[in-house]
Image (cartoon, rainbow, N blue to C red; front, side, top):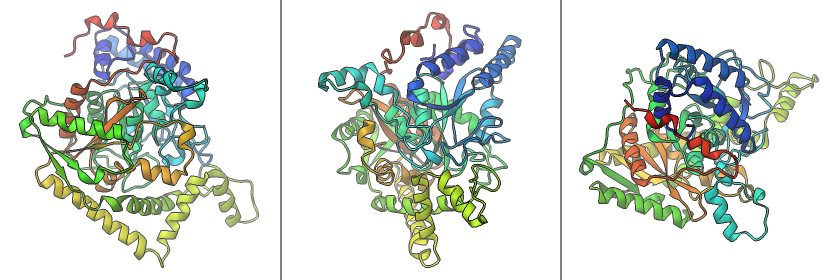
Length: 526
């Protein structure tokens, strides 16, 4: 049941083959069984069961609110949720309970979705491993998969299996792990430089970053206002399209959202491949790219070509400047956004009462970790009067050039770009922590952060398992506000590659029950 797609389970609910309460209880049970993953910071059990009860009443009356009515979802813990603690995995906001819902959260609830809980992340979403939050690191469900464990047994020599657990990627690692481990059908992440697509690739799920301005940021605790986008994590492309159709649209509380009405994101079948042009950016073939990812990238390009699509090499000439540019702009906006956490209005406040300045300093020292403080320091340096023109203004100019590169490529006739999502498959935590946060983020966001600077839609789709038995995802990048076209191509690709389902028998005794389909045998999809 839990292994089914969102659309299939929605139909099962409408046909009375399962109830929202049964579905909710199964997910809650699975959350407890997979507690070792540390995917959730807060499990909102009472709230979810009450929502399931209300959903059940609606179904009995034949008044379903839509495709998400009675569907379990999870939300990254940097989205405001009324009455539910929102921490950003930081001491600064530990215990903070917002008085309102983020727009995207409210839209999910208005459709009858069941909120299972708030998911784990890097502190204030600053990281690429979901390892730097105060609640501890998130463990990748594939660490406990049959596919990975069997490969490990062939190579290990008496080493402890538990010491080789894998990172999820970040910063939306909790949301990716929650979806991958079947504890919910969809989850919200945030994406500033790849924070939805990166963990999606490592956890074998679909990670969508919509066009900037398509989905409201109101209630998403800001990291970089000009790049932040609410992300969507699901187990298939169709499910991501369903959720996007619900979340997209103008929000008077977010002036950056589009004014035009948004049509439902129904994905047509891709039949005439001859009209499709796929671009392969030559600058993305870097020395750091693993041979396996490179091989799968080539196979994917050949797949499109063999089916009649036009596949051409393209150039994004300013790619080499994007990491430095992103770092300057990101830390500058971080410095500005983090200024609100001063201990006066909400969040953590220290006990120092020597002076206001001393209270500010002590509060921020106690509330922020080294990563956050480091980014604040960097950002304030770039924004100094004597540095502003040389760093921040220059970075903005380079950002415009990077965005123009994409415009030029799409104007040349390319419909969608095909790139790697990450340099390699997920790595063990022990290997990941050998380098500092800044170095890791620069490496892991190599293929993803330019998309945020250009405001384009992008989606990571799992393609195949590596020789280690771990998922590898590829990224599709589309034209601004052509999210439907992007997802249509991604859906076709997903159907061709038939990515295998994670086998979690070693983590859950009754894993097979996730895929039982006795009740669903008669589900008819309309």
